[in-house]
Length: 377
Image (cartoon, rainbow, N blue to C red):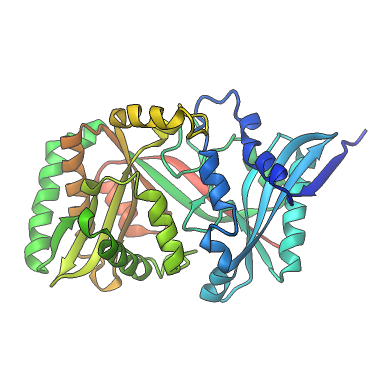
């Protein structure tokens, strides 16, 4: 007898809470899963709070199989993406599902129907909510937990997505830099030599974030970000409100000693930021910041021994001048001072040759691959 699968659109706060909490069923026995903070997910999905929704629409769906909650998906229309790229691409995100083609197909069908009703011609994902957020399906590297703001999923999701007819759009790489590399004096000395050449040849100066001038610093970061990434696949410039929203979320997690600027005559030409891997803390909080999660966070934050090099951008005119090597050198030196023993460089587009080459030159290990999929609708 064919299973009865019912799709229900999320319209109430109770259903939204079920949507947010559903992953706890999927990952209850998975030692590598890191529960997201419920507060953060709710904030990101609330239209009156997240400025992303000033230029985007979303529909959330739940799937019930024989009356039991069995899956979820979000369908997203990002008007700024379509204006910037001059296309009609809609997105799916927040996909979680039991290992059942009937359920996954119904979820994808619901997302497609919504996107087609908005005039979209392609469905792309997983993307939560845009390429400025968490993206990609993990397809290789299931043997370790994700680092901060990277995704994780069971291996069977690959077949659920393939079964619906999705095909590869782009792969994203994550590189692991272990203690053997971070403590390798030969690597560091080579980076120091390159650093001296870069500083002298192009009169480029480097500095860390000035936390006392945070508003001014954020405007400089925004300037570099929207210039440096504008030619990257899938990039969408952030509005001022979106940038402030993200900065407000990341500021408590950031370490000013791991945020670097490259400048020429006082003008920013590059920016790099590594975040402490707070997933090492969040893993112990089970999604709850209150009442006791905040204490776990304060107690365990000093035990964090990893970072994620989350963003490195150089404006177009100053690319291929070796600025990346200086950022890497400064980051490694700071890791030494702070007792950081491992790092991840992510995510890197598979065809971002300069960053791929930077990772290769470091002898970094390509240890996780994420994939974004497309399907014409």
